[in-house]
Length: 134
Image: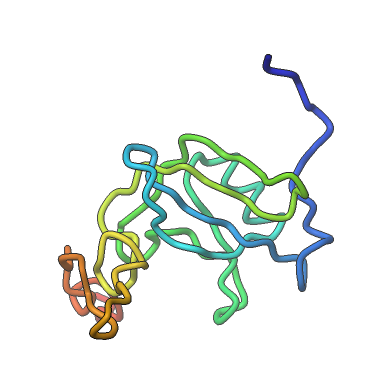
């Protein structure tokens, strides 16, 4: 039976520097697309816009998925784990999820012969990033 649990939200105080891991999963296949980080501001923007927004630890700012590439993630469902310290986002991925142009960030597979790429690159990242401004 479904029970309302209205008083629970992700607990950003549990994460280092207020960041919680956010796992993006394909709404259609269930495949894990990527792992990123969210702070309370990124989470609030995700809820408000319906598109995934993360916190970039390297840039030290909000990162709206697809802001450069156009490869956005439309949010279909959001879940939190039992401890409210991990976020699972079910998304409709538009374009490549990975900045290297692959459908997911998990395109390398460990085999008996070592690491192998087992996915086809969807787009050359050089055509998406660091384009000169016009």
